[in-house]
Length: 242
Ligand code: SF4
Ligand code: SF4
Image 1: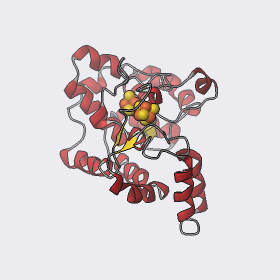
Image 2 (image 1 turned 45 degrees about the horizontal axis):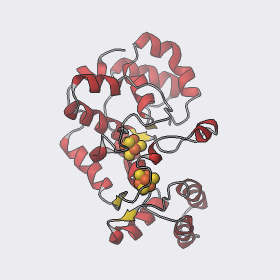
Image 3 (image 1 turned 60 degrees about the vertical axis):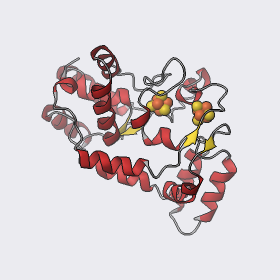
Image 4 (image 1 turned 90 degrees about the vertical axis):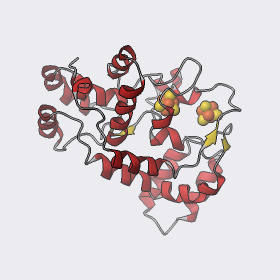
């Protein structure tokens, strides 16, 4: 591995950008998991899910990746930083941030996908939200919302911020959070120049917008010769790279 992410100036994100990201996160209602029978069970994949190529809990946007890298560098000792930044498995069975006791070791900076999980307790609530915007939003968005959000309900959570739920769900079905995170991800500068050039040659894009912790790490830190040799195939067979 190169040392690129440990050598660049820290933090990657300017305070104003971090504040904007935090403002997005604060729109998401909080939940309590105190009644969980198996804390953290939503942070790893079962054998059946692995076999089914089911993977919905690990994607993050580039802006979130940079935010988590900053957090890891500021809050963990050198060995732990190295261990987390060395994770290059694009689709691990267990989230690398999950603690032995089922907690999240990066809870203050966990990505959007983890924050929105379990806000609703029943699939019927997802269907009600979808029905409420029929004819007002693109049917493609509504179908996409229905097909993904039905897997993010958890009947064991208890809402902490009930007053935020209606606005939150309307933002979700209109992909409002995602659109803002995509726009922010397009401006974040976390890849070195050589990798940026190579990425653009292969994909036609400036950098990945949404991927996984391991996928981002592999691109940022594998030696340039390895990235050049293998990255095209990695990207083509990626589960979540966008
Ligand atoms: S979201 Fe549900 S499964 Fe995950 S820790 Fe909370 S209560 Fe448990
Ligand atoms: S980042 Fe935290 S909340 Fe999200 S899957 Fe990993 S351990 Fe769970």
